[in-house]
Length: 294
Image (cartoon, rainbow, N blue to C red; front, top):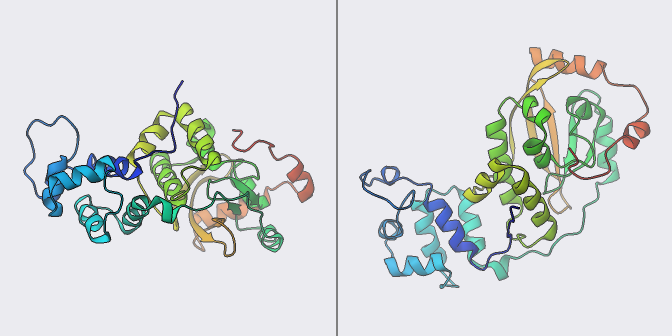
């Protein structure tokens, strides 16, 4: 049985090693080739390019320097080609006590916001927490995908549900972005037992998830073009906006919309016309009871 350990006594070192293995010598102006026992850059190469001593960089990876300065961390961040979000994550890992957030209780969807998205009959929308659990969805979102329904976990759906893989035309990119987004949203909360349970279930069920989680990618989810293949209305190209909900601990409103006058706009209107007119309360009673039960 595959077991995942969420809490590490050296999260900073694990992150530096994971990112170092993803950078090739030629990416940073070093000659390629030569015999290498490990992928990516060597420790001494990162140290040299960061203008710090090899011994000091070794102490960073081994977790023996508990208080590196921001300037010291910024140097290897540049060498390892970290984006701003990933660099911020690196700084948080270097100061776990100062940046550790309290494990949050389950969030509740503001009732007024739930009523608002219910009123959008032609615009798919749902609300999710930081672990991608769907907390509320409108009727057209549920018609778009059976996984856009309260009680489902979208990461479990995308990795473990074969139908969801067929539904998403860019499954490889979606899975990579999903794991990087989970890392970003969970920064400072890696000892959350609910997060550990989710990561453990995904690691047991998906080789791809294990590989992506080991990369330590960080990516903030804002918005992108979502490409779907719907079984009833065919291909869809929808803009997906990820909007943070103020006053909550990580809740996001996800809204899909099509460019006016396009085939996707026509298909979305067709999908809206196919929705079962059963009362909303009846639709909610048919929602699954277990989170991520795909």
